[in-house]
Image (cartoon, rainbow, N blue to C red; front, side, top):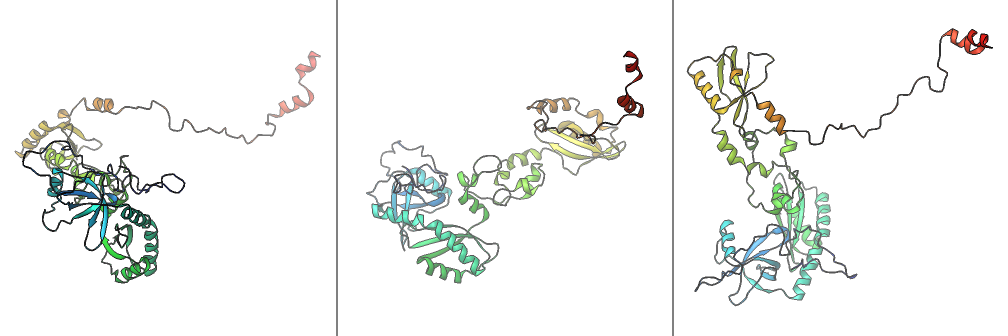
Length: 398
């Protein structure tokens, strides 16, 4: 089913909801759960689960109970009893997988689950579409009111209810905000019930969407629903440079993907020695410079060796050297335990894939203008005299 808010205009062309596929009113938006149980018959004596998943704007989802006699399919537009008010949404999942989704999101199957009234009528869908078209204008006017009242908050999005009688204003604020005067003015200006809801920077990025530094759509707007806290220790475990520009996402916070492989890094780092480990060598002490968990190599730096670089030592050999140093034995030099073929391996791994072209090969080189341009080039005195009177050689030839 296509997006119900992308109906055709007066000229016959589709108007479009301008949400880039994340409007939540179609059956194939982001964060859609694939129903792999569709078409599989239930065991004898088992009834269909009476709760369905309904999606709203920007992939906001909720669970609602259907009547025992009604049957709904993915893509059906339904009217929901929110008490007070009526909202409109699109069915995004049915069947036994809804029970699993409720368990994941920790939603109880009790009397608090609201009910589905019916499939939306044509009049209800028209009111819903008219409410959706008011959201952009309402957001702009609300921002002007916030600026005039000098309230320190950022309004990110506005979502109207299906009956056009209530709107939810999503905002971001660093401190506690007293918006009682704002609510009264918004309610009087737009003639609606106002619900102010504070969200975080990550939730804002999920609602707005965008492209990350990896070139793909943001994880929070496509599939990520569990926003866990990310700390700089995640970058330290992965031995990444603590550069805020590279580690921060579009929300201004640390990237969520720093936690994706953190468990594997922690498990691998536990097999390596402590970064504060020191080895007694003939020239003084050697400390750990860095560790490569993929190649299982430990780089040591001898403090007494001026001008010497890091010495790569295999992990197993490094553990033996540390154990000897703990017993009081002094190692002559770490160079004899260094990996000799490591530079060749690095050169084979990182190659020049664009050839030997220079980055400035397309720049036009300008010829240096001579200071004698447009003038006669000076010569010695005899040459000037010969030029005027003629040389003796040329006179004798005549």
